[in-house]
Amino acid sequence: MAQVKVYGLREQLNPVKARLSDLIHGCVVEALGLPPEKRFHRFFPMEREDFLFPPDRSDRYTILEISLFEGRTPDTRKRLIRLLYDRLGAELQLSPMDLEITLFETPKRNWGIRGVSGDELSLDYKVEA
Image (cartoon, rainbow, N blue to C red):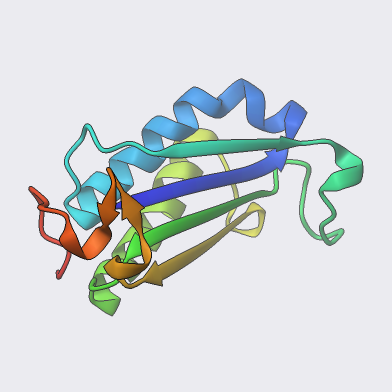
């Protein structure tokens, strides 16, 4: 399981939302081994007065927050981060200074999905990798 939140300035985020979702999802599927149909993305296009950031970032500054079941190795998590920087840079010309990524890992038991605790789910993919 992975849930993605994307924050950015409205005028920058909205035009690339669909492509950004596709790129992020491709990285998550490749790095974490999630099934392709497991896409959970939420976009938060923000007004300039609600999205404050340092002057060394451009208007394209984007924050990705990805919530995950715990269990992936540090190498797997680093691979996801590298893929995101590589693909979003190459495909959307999003510079490393304008992209910040945070992975939040929590125990499966802290998730409620389809009426049960996450640790009671039967998954068709492996989390511990």
